[in-house]
Amino acid sequence: MLHADLLRSPGAAKAGPPDWPASFAALADQAQDPRLRTYYAAGMAAGDTPLSRAPLIALDVETTGLDPARDGIVSVGLVPMHLDRIASSRSRHWIVKPRAPLGAESVTIHGITDSQVRHAPDLDQILDELLGVIAGHVLVVHCADIERQFLNAALVSRIGEGIRFPVVDTMELEARMHRGQPRSLVDRVLGRKPAWVSIRLADSRARYGLPRYRPHHAMTDALASAELLQAQVAHHYTPDTPLRDVWQ
Image 1: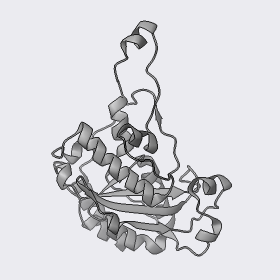
Image 2 (image 1 turned 135 degrees about the vertical axis):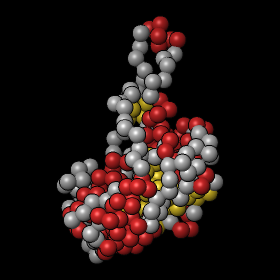
Image 3 (image 1 turned 90 degrees about the vertical axis):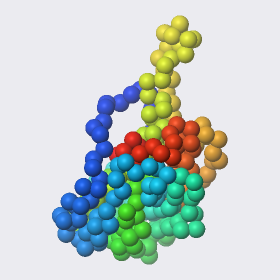
Image 4 (image 1 turned 60 degrees about the vertical axis):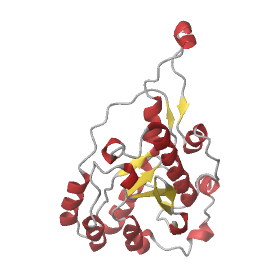
């Protein structure tokens, strides 16, 4: 994924998570595209569902840039998971043809070239399959704004409707660990402000001793996010933590 995610200090307080089961029921009635109706009709787990029983699937998208109004998706990776295991054998990866040109910078980052996307399907052509895989699942991502904004924009431009879905954002969970951290005695004596803390995916994984993977490959980054969530829960939560405490 393409994003900058350094944390310095606590951000503005966020409203509580929505009632996703009720939202999905309403969205199933409102959706016009049959694929979206089927997706929403599959329902969503309740907020009091323990993480150990939550239907989770890690998601990552690679894009042509950072602006969802101008840039497009070039690949999608999905990795089904539970807290105690990751179903790598059921992982999915698609390269899709964006409706925006591939810039040299984005090619350098994710390595997907014009020749690879020239005959790739449009996202609309895999939408039924994609929605079928994620139906009923809470998505695990690292930087929710990327996946949400790009998928929403992609659907709006193709079918005239956006998409909503709950996420567990490992970047946001990592940010929680470092917001408002008390300054050390040395910092207080010297009057120093708290240091910047990187919550990039690789840096977050390193804090838990997780291995470094090749970045900016959709399926690998989805796997990396899945493993990071497992580590975060093991260190900071419990398997009985309800979804409402970590999703948004």
